[in-house]
Length: 360
Image (cartoon, rainbow, N blue to C red; front, top):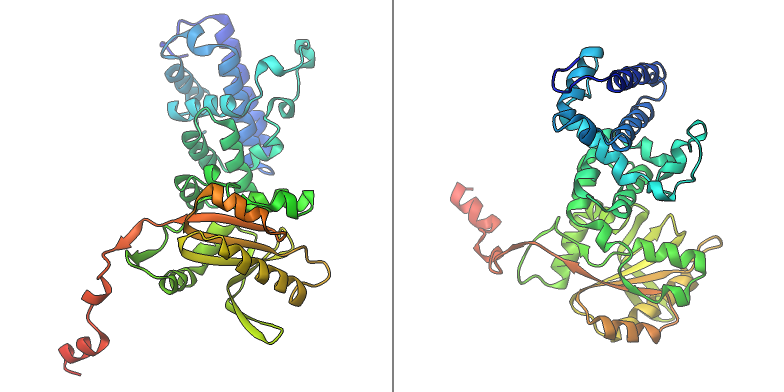
């Protein structure tokens, strides 16, 4: 045993039980590797918290525990000091407060499921540990935010790189933040899901564009990066077309972008504006939404939704403008970071100049 802790019988008994639990979990691990591992990490984190281990066994507790577990299980990875501290934080972040648990005897302790925040449930143990550590780092003392990212990883099968990207763009803070009239214009079930799919602002940081860009340049850039644009919109979006032609009566109209949302089972008309929101935009988009309902919507499709993504907006003006429309519409801003100087394109040589220089 480690010399960092003055050995007492309780510590010796506990450390033996921990190693036995790990060995038992290893038997099942061939079938449910990640689930078993995270459940074990959860239980060890719980022990550390409930035993007040750092207070009871001193400031070198984690070093001692690491050394002893490596001694007892020499061929097992995962018992570094850093990983042990993550286990403790894992339990602290996602566990229901002990004060809210039923007061029962030790022989009737509540199951693991009863101790986990209801927002994540059993999903918690389905997330890779590398993802989980990233969530723990980014969501300190914010279990609601942490639960949001756990569910996003599980539902959308995000890689760790994708998870880190969305956490860096503060997806949790932006999610469902668009100003909309969905609550008044859609059935209850659909309105909640529709609001959830919105963001404010939308992050177009994946674009590199000049400072003096116009609307066409922005839309071209979005189409050149359609996969990333779809990812920013939501994983439920499927692209239908850009400048989508609709013949309304005898008039041709062209929708900026038309999507179909698989989760909501409806078309989504997106209008992108490089200027501040104008109430007149509501009338234009409302007409497009109504037209799609009449022309494209089929049996099984829910009501079409409109979304205006603009450079800036006055939130009060946007709310008042939405009250004038019976069509479901949301209004969000977008943000850009990667901007070249306005005259950047002018400084680039043309194809003709390059060919001339090469002697063609």
